[in-house]
View 1 (cartoon, rainbow, N blue to C red):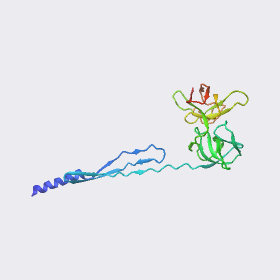
View 2 (view 1 turned 60 degrees about the horizontal axis):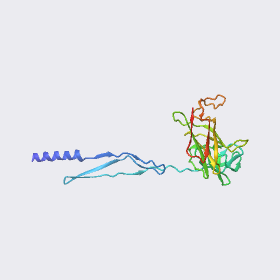
View 3 (view 1 turned 90 degrees about the horizontal axis):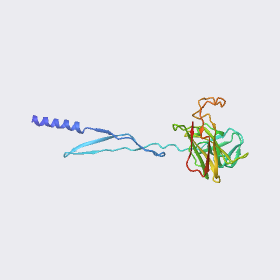
View 4 (view 1 turned 120 degrees about the horizontal axis):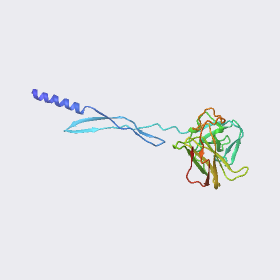
Length: 258
């Protein structure tokens, strides 16, 4: 009788050690989708074990949760700080003006162009157009808003990097066709990716000259916070300083800061 009791106690201890409670973790899986992201949260799996006719049965439940979706963009109001500001049909000086607006005019900001130099806006009269971003004053970071792709345009696109491939921001270019007193002209500035976007009318054709002409204070080659052009606190230039592009353009014009 004592031997049977000892065996029973030993069997009970073995079952408790082996099948008590097992907690495991599942790996975190993150979705790369930009909208309505679904995430499998790192949760434990509680496993319940039973001994029935020497057969082990395990069941596990995984709880799946949905991550909070990012808030949709909501258009907001801003105003222009300058007088006689043109609201254009598309982003760029080669497009006609829809309206001439006065200093302080309130505009609804709808989005930005690729490159962020132009803002898509709605005027008080309900019409929509494009305004040069530096003429708009706002408490909201205009570069943090969504991109709106302009319609009925073609592009002259370029990129400036240094010898290590680092993008160079704030490099200004003039893009013009022909000669004379007032040739068709657009101006552009490279963004944080070192890229510029010159939006052109669909009717624009043939050769256009892209010429390096300025460095903005926000450029990452600028080493002085004073923004004094008399000090010229940077070294280097664009190579080549001028290039020719034929419309319609294919590819990206690659330029080097040396």
